Amino acid sequence: MTDAPPPVLVVIDRAAAGGPPLGPGETGFRVVDPAAPTIHVTDLGVTRGDGIFEGLGVSHGSIQALEPHLARLARSAALLDLPELDLDVIRAACLESARLHEPAPLLLQKLVVTRGVEGGDGSPTAWVRTELMPDHDRERREGIRVVSLDRGYRHDVAQTSPWLLQGAKTLSYAVNKSVLREAARRGADDVLFVSSDGYALEGPSASLVARVDGRYLTPRTDQGILEGTTQADAFEVLRSLGHDVAEELLPMDVVRRADALWLLSSGRLIAPVSALDDVPVAIDAELTRQLGDALVDRRA
Amino acid sequence: MTDAPPPVLVVIDRAAAGGPPLGPGETGFRVVDPAAPTIHVTDLGVTRGDGIFEGLGVSHGSIQALEPHLARLARSAALLDLPELDLDVIRAACLESARLHEPAPLLLQKLVVTRGVEGGDGSPTAWVRTELMPDHDRERREGIRVVSLDRGYRHDVAQTSPWLLQGAKTLSYAVNKSVLREAARRGADDVLFVSSDGYALEGPSASLVARVDGRYLTPRTDQGILEGTTQADAFEVLRSLGHDVAEELLPMDVVRRADALWLLSSGRLIAPVSALDDVPVAIDAELTRQLGDALVDRRA
Image (cartoon, chains in turn blue, yellow):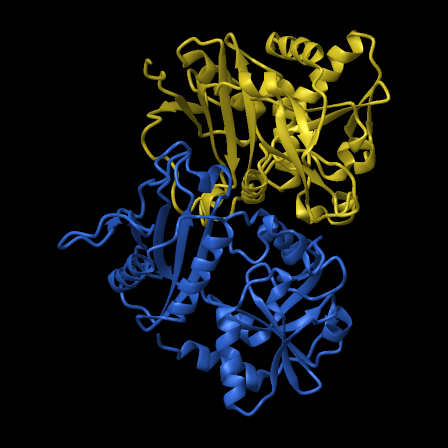
């Protein structure tokens, strides 16, 4: 076994728009030692989970769905009243971070923007870190066991109570980790969040796709859930294959009669659900492989 | 105006219980440069808000309600399935951090424990930072304008859905900051969270006390809210003055007919509510001063 190549860490000093123009040769970001600490204990990202992030896949050097990820980052920033972001600087930092990593078929990038240091000048703290993609082959092939867990909010909470930040991809993800521990206690690998009034929502880091009566359905994103960048691309593939796709309100009783279920995300890409709440779900291995190959092959 | 004295930052390397015994002269913590970054970008505290904290007041060198704060930290750790904490090491770090700060009547400590670095050895990252207490005199005297905002969860969510971590003081506080921005948009200073079924809960960083029909009431903590260390001490004072105090379910219509309301917390200690949802609330200046003085005068 060889050592993994070192991650690449790029700190983005000019993540906010509206500063003075960059001078000749200035990029607004810098490559730093990934092994050294770079965050202050007074950063609101760590003291309050007050920031946003994106996870991006890199396939053969090309960042997948980079523009949709940047657009979602900007939407999250707006939901949190963060400063407007300079997506050109952030995009360039992502590209440089990917370029500097030792070549590998698949890399994973984490892009983070926090509200910055408490009592500071209001500049966000931002960075992008690139590392080898963990191996998800087994989950893609054998599927994952999923349990449904109450998210506690009604499906319309993003409309009634926007201050709850549902639909923003924030750093306040303690619950998203907690539900995975609850899943493990129940012998499962992942979670499907359900609204308090019974609608299927999303996983803690993935979008749901359900095949029901021959149609491919994903929960409507006006329910305080994230627009799935990988789900969107999978729907493009399904459309090109002649399938009917739709975003809908999905009551759990509809999900429970699906003849196939998947969780889609930027890292693992696609994982078929082999059981939902201990009830076996059939795996469409051929379609899963087809979608997985198409998702791996995406170029920016 | 003189420069503020520098904060004191103590990193707690041995926050988890169960390690090898400390050697002679070993403390399990170390004083570090407060101006230097100490957190890695892969720390789960910053990437996932996956950790817990306490805010502690220090009055004339004595940490207020230290043991209740440590007990609450341990409860939060248990709710998050964090390693069991070594409260002796953490206590000593807090005391040393307070001792090393330049003397001042009032200091503020922030104690943080995260799940540690992703892919690391499982050790928590922990620190305690001491700085001058911000001045809260005006709020204590003139009161604060409060708006009630839906927290989105039913009052019994901590029982039905413990994976939502309600009642743990986690680093995932983006919503607690978001609601303060919503309050500011409404011309207010602070927030009272309300359950989706209409019960008063707590502020984003404070406990509610309401005087109703001559009794002093605070919401029951089995509703996924924090046990208020300052509220508990204020109730002791009220009891010693012969008043009737109780923890109850408080429907908002009961709160709205209170003849006095307060928010209590470790930093600001006590702030009378001067308006709730734009409806003026009378301020009992004499009792507020009496409680405030008693809270300032607490010694460990």
